[in-house]
Image (cartoon, rainbow, N blue to C red):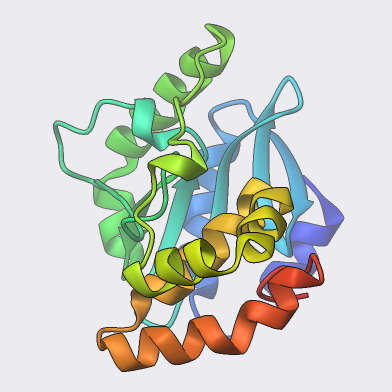
Amino acid sequence: MNAKVDQFLNRAEQWKQEFEALRATVVACGLDEDFKWGQPCYTWNKANIVLIHGFKDYCALLFFKGALLDNSSGLLTQQTDNVQSARQMRFSTTTEIIALKQQIKSCIFEAIEVEKAGLKVVLKKTEDFEVAEEFRQKMEALPALKIAFEALTPGRQRAYLFHFLAAKQAKTRAARVEKYIPQILNGKGLND
C-alpha cells in the first residue's frame, strides 16, 4: 500500500467508498500501487496498467491499453472519440463494484497479459486526423504557418486540430484559427 494513496483516499469527499472498493480489488490482483497524475495508479513491472479516478457522475478504472482488451461485456468505454488507447470501466455505486468484482479482476489480468506480451496500441498519426477547412485554407495562404505548424510536436498539432474542429460553425472555426495563428508562428502549443 502506498502512503500517498492513503492520503488521497482520506481527502476524498466524493467516491471514497467506491475508491476503497476499487483499490482492494486492484491490489488483490498483485499490482504495485503508485500515485501518478494525482491519482492511484497500479503498475506491473513498472508499466502502467490501471488508474483509479473520479468524475462528477462516476468513478472509474482507466486501463491504459484498454483498446487492446476484450470488450465483449461492454464494460469498457472510450472517454471521447479522440482517446486512442485508454478505456474506462465506470461505476456509480460500491454495490456495482462488488457485483462486477470478478469481471474487473479478469480485465486487470488480461491487461497484465497484454503488457507481458509487449503489445502496443497502433496510434493514428497526426496527419490522419481531420483538418478544419478554415485552417487548411490559412496554411495554403500562409506557407510560414504550415511550416510552423509542422514544426510543433504531434501532441500540440492534435490539440490545435481538435480545438478548431470542435467549433460547429465555420465562423467560429475561422475565429479560432485567426486567434491562434500568432501562437503557432511562435512555436507554441494551444495551452502554452
